[in-house]
Amino acid sequence: MILNRLEIAINAAVSAGDLLMDHYGKVYGIKNKESLRDVVSEIDELSESKVMSILQESDPGCTVLTEEKGLIGPDSDSRWIVDALDGTVNYIHNIPFFCVSISYWVDNRPSIGAIYNPYSGDIYYAEKGVGCFVNQKRLHLLDVELGNNLTAMAFSGKAYNPSMRSTEFGIFGQLNDLSQGCLRTGSAAMNLSYLSHGKFSLVMGKANKLWDVAAGLLIAEEAGADVKFNMTDKQKHLVDYIAATPSSKKKIYTDIDMSYFDL
Image 1 (cartoon, rainbow, N blue to C red):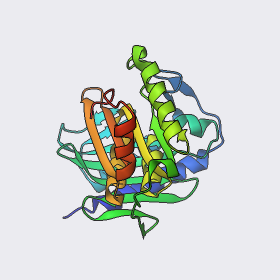
Image 2: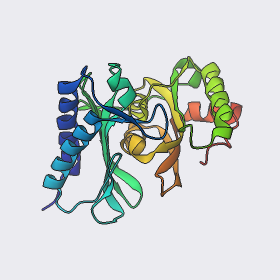
Image 3: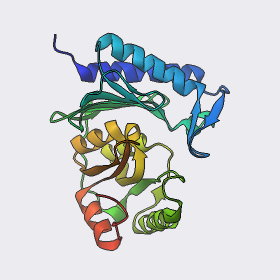
Image 4: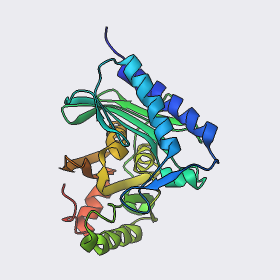
């Protein structure tokens, strides 16, 4: 039997997203992980369980890397990568910028990606070599210049390298001045989705968790973005990345010292 993994990813993302909306606006037990922003709630775990049940039923014996439970199943280069609630802090504060992100990777590269924001009802999805879509509409990213659009940056956790925090804040400020504004939205997955839709012309991140960006990197690339990423710490699943329109990427490599990013 040939599995339609894109269909499985979309089904799992929408099912988990509907669960998130059923519980939206309610108060849940919250635990801090590595920092004040790095939190996990009961709803993260409920959503992840929903995704896992669908993946394991649809793709028996599969390998899954999840945010909350780590690696499940045999250690394989072909695996599902799941963030069942990207933007937990936004979610618990009733800010409607969060999503479910599900991807399938083969040989350390993304082949399938689906990102669902249940509040807006937007489902972004892509398959390698097939294209990027939102709600069944094909997306083609225009080469918008950096100064004519918004940008977004996702920071590393405070515990990653405290001595370099000022460097990241400095790059954020430079990017803010070179564009119509640089945002820190609280969801790296949604940043990449918005890039694919032309709402941003550049997004980048330092030492982000793989599950935050695993689907979005493919979605942005299939929409036509210039995407570059590097697994900087495979054991901790940390990724540096930049995704942008070609002219925007050229602009920041001309005007900003990007040596801090391992790309």
